[in-house]
Length: 282
Image (tube, rainbow, N blue to C red):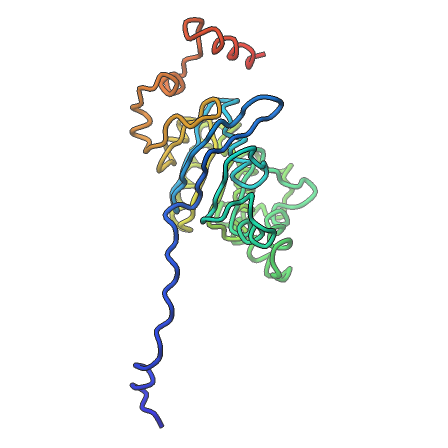
């Protein structure tokens, strides 16, 4: 019989795992028009693995359209979105399904199904995309809801929850499949300052535990600076600045400065800008 030490030393080493790219998402030359208006105008953006990138911008800046494009819901007119090197809009159905299985999404209003309990809402991605038995789905839903402090509410309907609780339930559902990238659309919108701060801390804790990439769309500056590793500010469909919060806060770009200082456009900023501002108020 061959000696054990020889068996061990002659066993071939397993192949090295392929190196993961530094960027989870790469956006190049992204353009999109809606209703005859150019909403995205040549967006270039890199989102690094395991970072929290906050996309900040005013209403109508193009940030929500950018989010829909990133998650595969809004095909661009030009340009590409690559996730782990695969073009989302050139991939075949099998490749696309594999990518989507690794993404999570929490919508602005929660998008919870009102006729289903909170636990059933969290179980839904597991039921649709995995072969996990119903009993185990229930256990996993309890775990995810426990992570966001809602284990005791798992059998309640969305209508029985506060706005902050619905946001946390949507977060639990976004985490159901243990995604590597999670997208959040206006997570603090409609919440009081205390509840919003609590949600910010929850996002920070979950990103640290799961080591996932987090992309947050918001216009809430306090939240953005609290959770971001980097901030990308978008204005009229273009990315003005992408950097760490300290650099963005110190930016002297007039548009960035006006947003950070909460100054509305005035007639001296130019007729078109002021007129557009007034139209958005109507």
